[in-house]
Length: 444
Image (cartoon, rainbow, N blue to C red):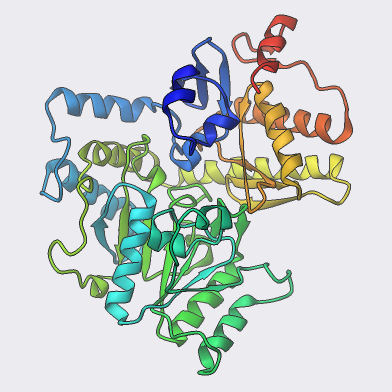
């Protein structure tokens, strides 16, 4: 660890929670240099929906590289880009009746959000954007302005303007429809809220604590936007690409956003890739007006096409995600019923679920105990109080059960002081030996 301590910036965060040197990964497994194997419920913070080094994507990528395919193409037309666009249109957009233009932005989610905010402001000629409490949209200044988290906002060092924050679904209690409040302030010229160009929302707030908006709230939000001539932007960077059980997280609500941002699992392989989808009439850019050196990652186009072709040509994969999501939800509910004492709840939908522990200290103890027993799992929320299940969507039923067994054992030990079952040995498929348990116990 010496070189990391001496050379790498203090800004590192995940490395502090999981202090190991990892050097191999496959499917839902991570391996460290000592040969220890861990189930991965972090999955690149939602970037690896199809697992590590998915062999289907790897084969396509290796073949492309070996024949000297274009790697970096700016916004030049390339065969890899054409084939991605054809698959994306034929198998994602067209079947859903979505008429969107695709803008290739810089390679990260925050790049896509920046572009979406700019085009909304350009099209409407207004500055103000409505975003929501606990929302997270990135750490570049425009996207950060729309982010609620004080920890991230505090690092900016400048004033952040052009955003009005509104309460998300459930923020004021289960019986308060916060879209009615938004409608009221937009209807009142004396509310002090400038007429916005757009509303920016996550259907499930990942970093904000796995807060899932109801379908009814999302439909009401769209109605309010249309009533007041405001664009609706859905940030689908973490919740999209199948995480909630449909390719886009807004599908279950039956809404049609004006603009959508995608990144994270879009490439399917962890390769940087982000896009903005927008109604054709919104595409008011002048050539080169918004660009980025790495907006032409052709390697990502190759694996993104492979992901779409293999997993999204029919409904089977989506049904599997929903089935596994139901299982995760049931297991978390059982944990709450067994250990919660009324102070713990579950949240989320699909395979985007969380265990709300109320206390960040408690959630941290649970994730550290889980790591000692072979599971990489993180926390989220304003106080890091939600244990976040973000495993690959392709995880086997056996390993999904094993991982949730580890979570349950960790909760049991931390909350009730009960004995933890013998640590599961992922090498042998049997309970760990005393020596192996000592190895795992040193992991945090």
